[in-house]
Image (cartoon, rainbow, N blue to C red; front, side, top):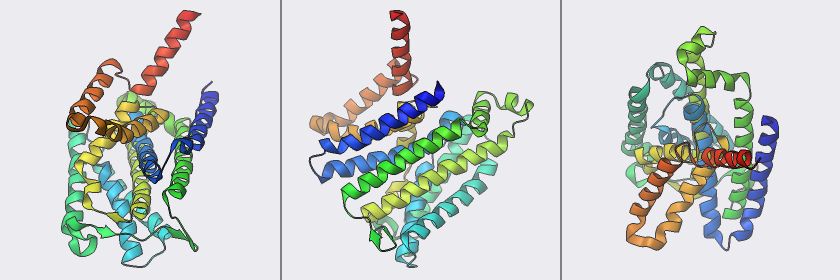
Amino acid sequence: MWKTARIGGLGALALILVLAPLGFPNAYFYDIAVKALFNAVVCIGLNLLIGYGGQISLGHAGFFALGAYGSAILTVTYKLPALPAMLLSALGVGVLAYLIGRPILRLKGHYLAMATLGIGIIIHIVLKTESGLTGGPDGMGVDPFSVMGFTMMGDRMWYWAAAALLVLAVWLSLNLIDSPVGRALRAVHGSEVGAEVVGVDTSSYKVMVFVVSAVFASLIGSLFAHKDGFITPDIGSFFRSVEFVVMVVLGGMASTFGSVVGAIILTLLPQVLTVVEDYEAMVFGGIMMGTMIFLPKGLLPSLVAGLRKRGGAAQ
């Protein structure tokens, strides 16, 4: 049943991504779609940490920014090719996440939230103050993404690359969840004490999922930098970290497809709400409050549960 739903979900996602460009009248729609897909991949990694591992992070935009600046510095300043620069940045972020994760993931609840918040703020401050390396608050330009003479140019090309990457990320996430690692993470989320009693090394699994989610963010940060061609430290701000968490919660924690839905909705919603002008923030807040009140498990899990109830009642 689970495998059938997984294959069906992947197929539906791929079909939607293939058909979506039919409704894009110009390059602006492609640009917004690419941003939504990038956000979705970051949220898939963050959902592994929050939804399955049960560990909160309010500093993931910092890892996103480190990936972006790592690629920018390595390609612009040190003239490395884009792909090795992206992989080296992801490796560096992974090592940093491991070194940070070992001590802070011993914390729980709001203590862990404050620790990850502090990490994000430190990264943001460093990116702003190290102007000689990062350009400081003014930001820095980034070279196009080129591999073996092929250069990614244009929003349409980036859309198809982002769509393929999203499908790959969903597939990897679903396979991880269905593996012994995924079962161990769910055990940690349910009860760390209980998991330790049955022999689960909770510390190692928490650090592992923290590193995986940070690497997801770093890779997308690198691609974001190359696509936009210019980055500033604001991409690693606290508000950006909160935005990622809200996307995961809105779509539905412990739901890979829910993370995709939440990321896409929260990326597109501000564009839709421009029609209400001065009331945009108020309407946005009202929608978020209503969703959390009436759909507390998140959009996708709540909708699926409602459909199952109706199906059961009809039988």
